[in-house]
Amino acid sequence: MSRTLVMGVVNVTPDSFSDGGRWFNADAAVAHGITLIEQGADLLDIGGESTRPGATRPTQDEELRRVLPVVRELATRIPVSVDTMRAEVARQSIEAGARIINDVSGGLADPNMHRVVAHAGVDYVCQHWRGHGAVMNQLSTYRDVVAEVTADLELRIEACLAAGMVADRVIVDPGLGFAKTAEHDWTILANLERFTGMGHRVLIGASRKRFLGHLLEGREPAGRDAATAAVSVICAQQGVWAVRTHEVCGQRDAVAVVERLTQARRWSSAGLDSTEPGSPGTDGD
Ligand code: PMM
Image (cartoon, rainbow, N blue to C red; front, side, top):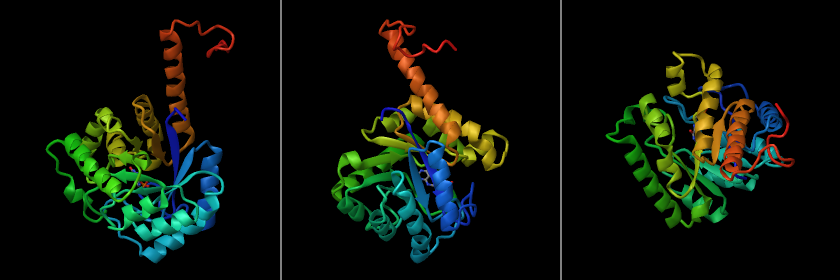
């Protein structure tokens, strides 16, 4: 599909910053996932560990208990990604039907992750990361955030390929908010072409994040969806593969606007008349 995809977030956690506790039992999480599908999500990202700054990690058993029943159910309806830093959770999630592993640590948290994903032959989101939630805010020092994040990602991609992953299966993500200040996040967004130019699909997770909260003078996470949609427009204009988002309707609208505008530009630059029958834009509004 040429347009930017919308990846809906299903956090099966008690403590995620934006929606912690809301979908914490499997039935509520599945129902929420179905709602996001009905709203137009292209894929769903299911996670059992909160990665917010200061979070404490669940045990592996607890993480498995949270995600597996939700993955099993939703994977029959839509492509599912599982947000995990643990190779064993990835392995069992793939068995349960997951088609993408979204590892916010890019393989740094678990030495077995790349091997498990390579062996399964599924897609892998390789995110930029410097440390777990408990310490990540102390690790946000950069001289040149774009150069350092792209260089770190290149090393992680090399590790993915060395473990046997096919290059096309690797999706890169600069990791907004992960060991990054609001200023770093804005600088990354201002230089998105450096990431889309790396030769891999790019995923961006801006949804309701702190840098938007700062911009909106401390507004609560649920009030940040319009600002998130503005970021989705920027991502779609830059050819980002998918945006990871808690709210789906507005983000689908945002990427639809960009898709439609791109089509109109193509017609217009080809000198075609968009009022001709069969062309875009004949509805008169
Ligand atoms: N952000 C969060 C969790 N997982 N995964 C990827 N690939 N990129 C992100 O930016 C990202 C992520 C944090 O948000 P949440 O706690 O609301 O899920």
